[in-house]
Length: 304
Image 1 (cartoon, rainbow, N blue to C red):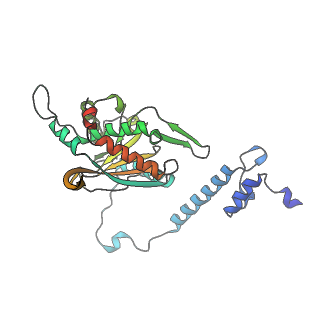
Image 2 (cartoon, rainbow, N blue to C red):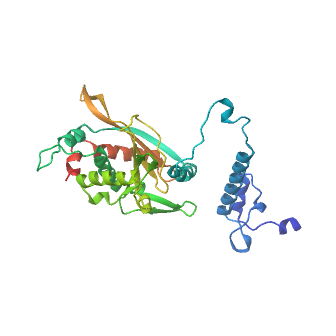
Image 3 (cartoon, rainbow, N blue to C red):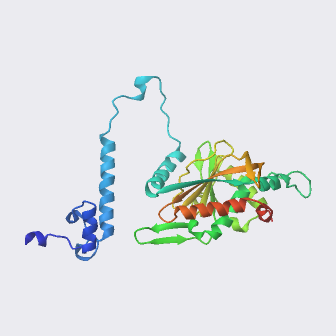
């Protein structure tokens, strides 16, 4: 009789959920009236216990040797920007179930068009970065796939935010560490404006003269290794966004088209996405659309 009296109030469904997890529901603190336990309380309890276990394991681990036991070493401070980024990256990686879709886009026409652009007054070749075209193409793709321009506010309550703006994050490599400012309202700017803004915002990051607010409120992020090298990789999503596009180094390849091999300029794409709301089929369709938007004829419309 006393055993029943001590049982916490909960529905049969919630009790079954606790049993499936191997959890004694009487150890869980209920958040509802009269201490009633709901599913969210069980998830919170399990998460707290796991966190405590991880912290305990970390604190109990001790290396038998130090680095200096094996040779000369130097102790340096981790750059402040990397210290700030560490917490952000760990949160993203542990909170978001990442999946990466790898593909490549034929950007031959885009690159030929880009290299043909000239100043109407001087006749000199315009130096427009490929990133300006990629950013514009990404926004065109986001318009067709609005789920990628969202953030999950509360997964337990089934809520998400669909953004009606297009602010694209650009990962900037600096001597202080990686910084991700936003290019605002990309849909309202032409290629010349975007190219100029990319230069300005990158310069501000390198000189540490950028406002903190510029690192927040993004739609999706682009991170490019093209100027350094490499092809495919697994970029970490910039929380609270739900996707990130990784760009590799553009390469000339022989591609079989219409019964013959032709030299084409191919751009490696690595799309990481939040599998809680985006599935593999949606990601593949997104990349297909992006490839179309980077391909033949689209570059001409982007330049206007």
